[in-house]
Image 1 (tube, rainbow, N blue to C red):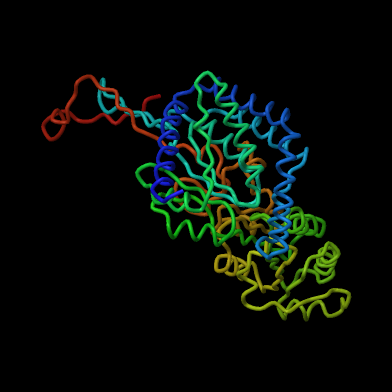
Image 2 (image 1 turned 90 degrees about the vertical axis):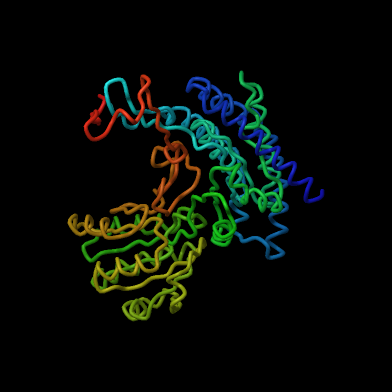
Length: 444
């Protein structure tokens, strides 16, 4: 296909998405929820087909792994099974159970008698979401987009193209059977060439959300001419304070690293107060080592663990404090104080999620106020930083920016607002010095 043909096809796809978004934006909550429940049914009914297509992807992912084009963690994220299909179906139902984020009155002001101003939430419009590996993301994103009234164009990785295609097909078939024939509210982009064109379409697209590797997200930020919402890294820390509880230290730290090492909210660096008991630290690292984790420690930590020869420790280098491993590796650093821990986190962290383990409530509150991150936790695993766990139904991505939306982005991050002014023939010439004054009264 020539460049001009691709461009024509992309423009048609985006045009259809825009048209669908305008219909979807005005669809009532009952009908949107009906579509989501029908989608949940369709996923369960088509589980055999979904798993068959996923098996094809797993074969290709295995080949890519052998050729060094895919990591073990990325290959593992491609895998679907009956449990994941059921989770996708439940995600649709969970999103349907949430309040409609669109059409809410955020603020109401009476400018004058018969002149009322309302700020009302509304969908963003047409969103491009680029992601890697995980095909279940197709359902998560589509469910949130449909509920919030947005059309979405999806671009997944080559390693999951068959799974992505069958899932998108199920969504589009479900939409086509709805009363409003909305199948173009969800579509797939097939190639990198198409993405290269899409990211330049500032007049046609409203937002880009990249999910995946640091390289992918940095590439999109660098080349996009459309607003981008996303995060470049998931370099999360756990800080074990001298006033930490032993049992909480063990559960929080192990869960943060071992529950799912390949995701952005897994812990990559463990910071330990110099007065934290060495025996407790050794026990945590021993359990990690038994789970296959490589331990990269600072010189001070190596020195304090000398009497635990069973631990296989590698001396960390400066680059380790900057690494998002998304693998069974953790860097460990001893610090003199909570202040030093915060300085380290604010310098090396990615503003994603950070946690402190301590029984000192005043220190915990100080830590959460001083750490610059989208999520700051006390005595809880970084793995809780997730849209589904936050009660958002699911998440369309994670943002570490400080504009529009931050942290796991659910429905509220997929709406913006517009101002609606209800008048009675007024012009601004009525108001000013020696004329009428504005009331600026809150409408209750």
